Length: 81
Image 1 (cartoon, rainbow, N blue to C red):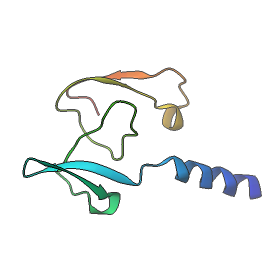
Image 2: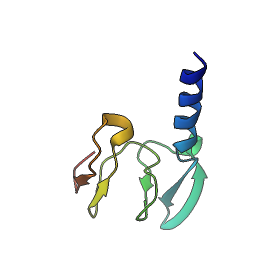
Image 3: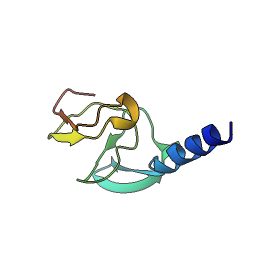
Image 4: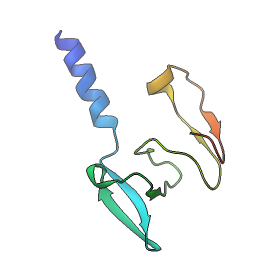
């Protein structure tokens, strides 16, 4: 039980604490709790993706290993989630 609790704490520590949103043409770093449905989130290269969403511009590779167990990054583009 102790190892499970420690593993959960470790996973929680990997989660982003803030999100960079675009509101009224301005970039704002806000706590995750303040992200609203419909917000545009801007993620720079190397940053953690803070919330679920759909890519509306650009493309990237995403490390989904914590979600899927797949060790190889997954390519994502417009329309992907």
